[in-house]
Every structure is written in structure tokens, then in C-alpha cells.
Amino acid sequence: MIHFLLGILTLSVSTPVSFENAFAPSDWQCGKVTWAEEPIVDPSKLFIGTAIIDCEVTGRSGRGLDGLERALHVRALSADTVIAGPIHETFEEMPGRRFDLRDTDALGSDRVTIDADVVFATDSSTRLVYQSVSRKVKGTGNASYIRKSDLRFDVTPSTVSGKWSFRFTQHTRIQKPPIIGGGAFRNEVIKTIERDAVKQIQATFAEFPSEM
Image 1 (cartoon, helix red, strand yellow):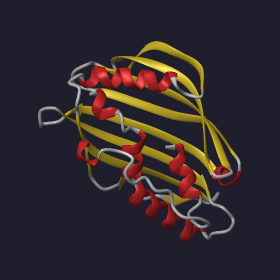
Image 2 (cartoon, rainbow, N blue to C red):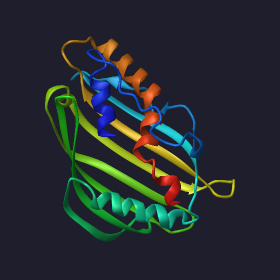
Image 3 (cartoon, one colour):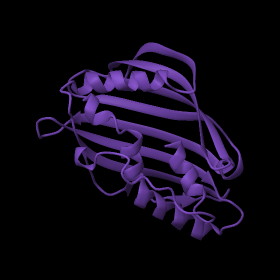
């Protein structure tokens, strides 16, 4: 999701990032972006918004939540830097694993490094939860305006056999650049997230259908 935030920050100076053809659309059915509450630009000129996306994903392997948990474990270990983990613990009354991870991404000359506390847990049959909470964000260029990027998703069995219901919750905080007014900045960020967030989630987690 870091690359997507960099794309948002270039909205007034370059072409939006494209995520077309980055995933198999037939494996994902997602609704439109909604908001936990109305996004704002606060008095400190900080955009604050929490986007919610509901998707139904078709599992291809038959491994279900255990397969997804293994994929998340592999993904965590492939971070740029594993500061700590895995630490085995109970999270939301389920056995889970916690990591302290550092990842860096770039778009052109802009770079951002995010340290995040990541935890995922599952009961192997009815529920899986993944949560990534950024605790340190350091960027250059446009990326220096990113203040926070948190992601959570909850997974449960769908009413349709072989399918899984995902609810993604993305909390974003971005400092307003001086080159754009507060109202225009808010509107452009909302427009960009509502246009591109679904494609970005599907591209970022493209391996999920084949692992579940």
C-alpha cells in the first residue's frame, strides 16, 4: 500500500499510478470504497481518513485460512528488514504471530520507509485478522508528507462455498503540501482513493486466491 500513497501525493504534479492488469479480476469481487466517517483536513492541515472496502475472494487451493496464514507469514519474512519476530501470542482470542517490520518503497525519486507492528491471527476455520500499524514513517520528496498508513483486514467464510469475505480498513494521514489548498487537497485524496484503492488492494494481495 505504500506505493499507492506515493501515487496519491503526486496527484497534482504527475499522472496517477495505474494498477490495471496487476491481478486476476475474476478472483475478486469488491464493492465501492466507503468511509468509516467523513474524511477531514484538520487544523494542522493533516488529511485524516479511514477507507473501508468489502471484497469476496475465490479460494483456488482449498487451504482456506491456514493457507492465507502461511502466505502472510512468508510475506512478513520477505520484508526489507525483520526487526523482530515472529513472536507467538494471542490476538483477539486467537493464536497469532507478531512482527516488527521495516519496508521501503519508491516512486520516481520519492522514497518512504515505514516501520510497522504487524500481527495476524486465525482460528483456522471461521476467522482471520491481519493488522499493520505504522509507528514510524520517514520519506523524501512528496513521500515526506505521509504521516501514517495503517491497514487491517478481517476474513470470514462467505455464504458461497469456496469464497471468502474480506473487509479491508485503510487508515491514512497525509500532511497537506503547500502547493494545494486544503479543500482541493481533501477532495483530490478522496477521489484518488475511491478510484484506485480497490485495484491497489487486489494488486498488493494478488497471491491470496491461489493460497486459500
